[in-house]
Image (cartoon, rainbow, N blue to C red; front, side):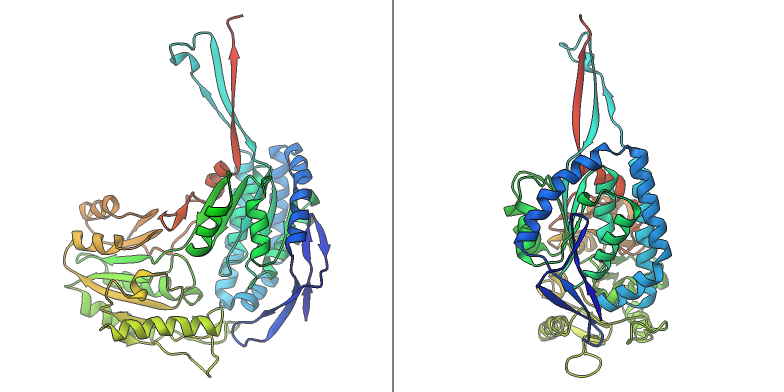
Length: 478
């Protein structure tokens, strides 16, 4: 059995606080990990102060080289990382390999951005009092970045915080989900092997006490969190005066208009609704179909969903693996039951596969779900798709916007006028035309509005949060 030590300022530290990590598919223990406490978290911040100084001494080219070396090391261990992702997350081996390749791309984009961090000349003499003055600003690293990541993409979502922070010249303290600390610890190993200053790298598996320290400590300048709205609100209330980047999930929608490609919308709903067992913040959860296409769409969708192969995530043929725990299956089944009691119709799925403690839920489609049902309003984070009809563009926009969230939305139409109506009317961080809302290129500005969060990820855009602007003015009047 694997036993992993936490990484504290570049050192591998053994603690008495050993926590078992279970394989979601079988609930068997696959590793034991040394978890941090408040004490280790406080030490990590103190060490990171020195790490920030060491990082600030590196030139952009040196940071670029270190990140490129880390990418090469990750590529060499790609299959090891992929298989570990299966064991700790339960995603299929094919999905795990995709995550590793995306993490490599995130590293490469971050490396490239390390050499592009610049400033801008400001025309001070455009102001009435600016005669004889020359100004510009430069960007400097903030110092210490705290990163907290969820269970569903423990490698690539950690990379989206750690790699840009290092590219910008900061020290990083990473707290991965307590459920999935293995690949983040392996990421820490790679960064140290690549040659980053040890004092700049800490990976601290732990619970709330660790998170509280690294989000509230006055020497931490930026907190970047991906996870639930509930925890995001707690962090926002307690973190104090510092930069805050939050990605808090969604209940993303697809809209199929009457002139849209029905077959493509079905395909993107299947791909987006059931990947990682629906445990993705931009999973397709709600589908609004024009009434002219509603019945045909439901028939074709249910037919395709029932073809999905469910089971062992290590099996190359598996399409949908387990949810993170049996408790999550029980939760979403209660949401489905509530919707059915409110008059919704179960089209397919809705049952656990296997014995009573199974963590695998059959891919599910529910139609005619009322807006006050949890399955419509909250983030399901499960392999469940809601399909409801609509009459016109205005109604569809209102249905999409009837949510506390606004991350990404996919719209299927052949009309540029209709597309623009949705683009202008939908309140979300991204509107994708003839594409599902689950699409993400790792260098694009990614994030949401409303309770989907604050700020944007993507290396170029994250670096804006991980640096401070310093204004410089020369008085040339003598």
